[in-house]
Length: 312
Image (cartoon, rainbow, N blue to C red; front, side, top):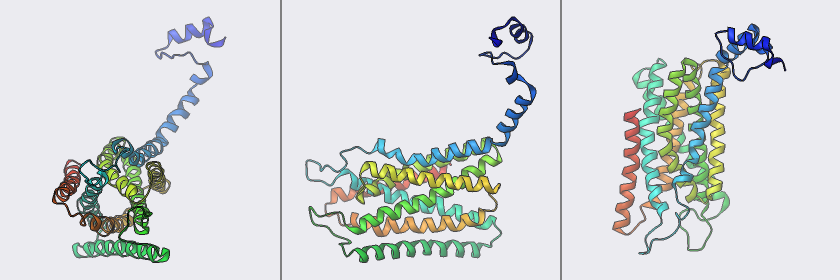
């Protein structure tokens, strides 16, 4: 064999580079080493961005490990199920995400883009209202088109159409949010490896508690655990699309102006889901003890997002 010949051993021992296992000499030729170096340098942002975008997107399946399979079982004293508490956490998390992450980031981007203070607030505010109204219109059209119940259910009846629409609307908003995460991750890796890692870590810390709430909303909307998991995987693909957009364009500056509108629209969608679709049903709780528990979970969701905003 070529790589076990005395000539090869003598050459390898006489060099300052230790290679194991001993590859054929042709792989040690200078032009192959130069090619590998160029590939590593040129495609480093692509490889890191794709891996990071997938990691952020697949954070959506973490709740599968945190939410127990018996989340729909009643307690012995006739109390509501664990899902109601998770939905309360989801409302708090969505509100914290909107007011402590999405809106500040959108305002900051608008100001950095050259808009005045009043102009930036107006742009963001209009996009937030657009997100709220678009989600309301879609929900109303779907509910009236089906002719099914929209707010109350009788025991044993199928899941109401409004809840099903809420789950799909949440997926849409979550997909748009993941798209912006992909843009941010790829843009940061194009700056430097360290910046990319810090950005990815910050997004992951923020995304995991947010995804717990999203998963609870999907379960309440009639999704099974496996269906909710598959839906979260699909939204991860949208995050990958965002990263590829930045990488193909070659800079994140071109997409900076669009991100202002995307973030603001997503904030409006999250506000609609939290305050219009989920919270009214939680407010129908008549038992003081259960209402207090739901309020504590709501505050816990908000404080969790506040802690993440302060740390990152």
